[in-house]
Structure formats: C-alpha cells, structure tokens
Amino acid sequence: MKRSIVLLITAGLSVAACGDDAPGPAASNAEKAWVTPPVIETAEIQGSSLVIGGAASPSGRIVLVAPGGRVFAAAADNRGRFSLVTPKPAADTLFTAEVQVGQARYPAPGRLLVSAGPGGPIAFVSAGAPTRRFDPAPVLDAVDSDGRATFLSGRGRASAVVTVTAGVQRPIEVGADGRWSAAPAGLPSVVVVDGQSFVPSIGAEGEDGLSATPGGWRLIWTAPGGARQATWFPAGQAETSP
Picture 1 (spheres, one colour):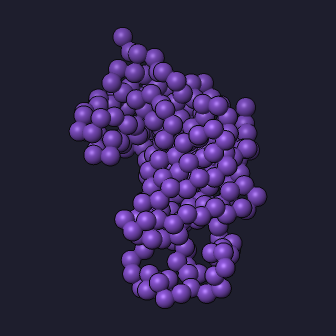
Picture 2 (cartoon, one colour):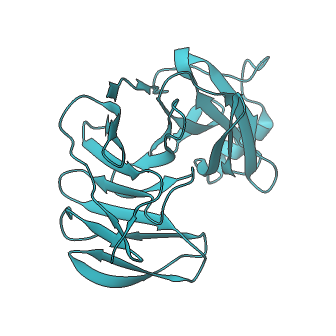
C-alpha cells in the first residue's frame, strides 16, 4: 500500500535564531572557518518524540525542518556533538538537516526518513551512497539503487567479517562504526548475508513515497537534481539458507 511521503526542503526558507537580527562576531568568525554539515548518527522514536543525535561543527546551530515547515534547532557543544528532539511525525517523512552559520546554510547530503507506522524504517538516505539505517533490522539493513549503481549495507560488530553473496560471494569487514557496505555489479535478485537470504523488491517506478512490499518496505524519492532513488528495507528476521 503506497503512502505519500512528506518531503521537506529548506531551500528558500529563512530561519534565524530567536531574537537575532544579524550574526554576531562569533558567527562572523565561524563563517571564516571550515563548517561541517550535520552527520546524523542516531535516530529513534521515544514515546511521542523523535530523538536525533550526531556531530557537526563545534558550537554550530543544527536545524531540522518538520512537517508544516516548523523548524527545530539545537546547538552542538564545543566538541561538535548534538542532540535534537522533535515531536514524532504523523506521516512518513523525509527531513532535511543543516548547519546554519549566520545566513549561510550547510545541508547534510541526504534526507532523514522517519516512518510513521509501527516497525517502519528510520534511516538516512543519500544519492550515490549506502543507506545508514537506525531502527532494528536483520543482518541486511538496506539495498539502494538509482538504476546504475547498487549498494548493500548492514551493521555488525566492529572488525567482524560478514559473508555477502550478491551474484558472487565475498567477505566484508565491518568498520569501526559498526557498519559495512558493498557495491555489487548490478541489482541482484537474491542477497545472502551470513546465511540469511533476502529478495529485494526494488525499482524506481511509481510515485515518490514509502510502501510496504513482500518482506519489507520500499522508498522511492527524488534527489536534488532530479535523480530518482529507490531503497528497499528488509523487515523482521530473514529466512536462513540451508
């Protein structure tokens, strides 16, 4: 069942800190330094709230746009760490996140997907990069495709080795951040990760949105520049291969 998705884009939206008419000396100095767009590292539903954590420029202002154009903001600490809490969205939503320095904005290179349905995916999706999923999932987090490149991604213990079969079999080491990814040649009809089999239901045909598919969910969205992206998220426990 296809559900329309709220795509919130910050372009053209003027956001300023409460009571600030112009950037002060600190903002002016920050504009001259390197600015790090927000990197979302955690996102989860806690009761009626969406709680997001990550890293950005030290003392930077993190801005997230919520349904209806409402803006939520939080300040990173002097190490660049931030935590931002918003109401749980009422509909499947693609959020944008950015660091704001004075009137300049530095967006994260992707969108944060938050499903409104129980058990639905929460993930950061990007054009030309593997999805970073945050909600519980099997050994395979997601399969991404734009019609040309394909990415597989998952999580595990840092430095552990997972065995991935997508046309050919290969060992992949889990990174220090607990994530692994692979880029097979073409879109496989079956993916096997450590003995668990998955049949991705993926394709960029149809309207943008999140929909239920056999064994999971499929997200179709349009990236800046018009490129169509599709991501399949497996649900629950996958079938174990004999």
